[in-house]
Image 1 (spheres, one colour):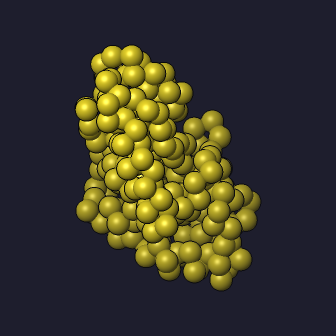
Image 2 (cartoon, rainbow, N blue to C red):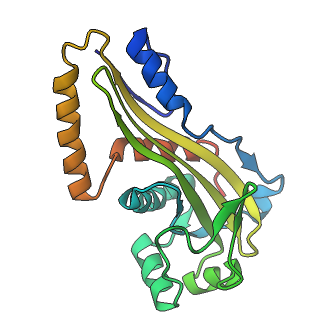
Length: 224
């Protein structure tokens, strides 16, 4: 049995690996990171993490990624508005559309804010100087007898009060197992189904992979 947890795809051996590789090929390709030339002159120190746009059916996963982003940013030098406070403020201001990315959406490599609330209004309401906005591209389990994978892909962008992009990166977290002989495949598949049920019940689906995807994203984010 070959097992790994990483932020990138690894090459596997044998026929089962080929099948798994074809499945993973259907994932969204990582996008090139972006950093504004004047980043350090414009980078905000007080930020909030908005609910990400979700292109998957995993609602709990999108929520988990928002919380994980909020937890990891302080180690990069940012003061982060508590995610629960952010959600409560959005609700109180009538902008509590926290499912499905209805505070904006991705288009042509940019985050498009609605006319109202504007990024400046959101920053004012949340008492911050910048916003992290994101999108969940992939949040999936693939269960085969000979191969199993758990993969999370997301992308995040930091914008200032005017909605100007200052930083962008995509990230991927993945765990994969290949069993060419298939002897233990059914047992492992059954165990993974049980683990998935526990994670879903606790509201932390694909926790390790979600965390790895955030770490992968933030690897290119400078301190303000």
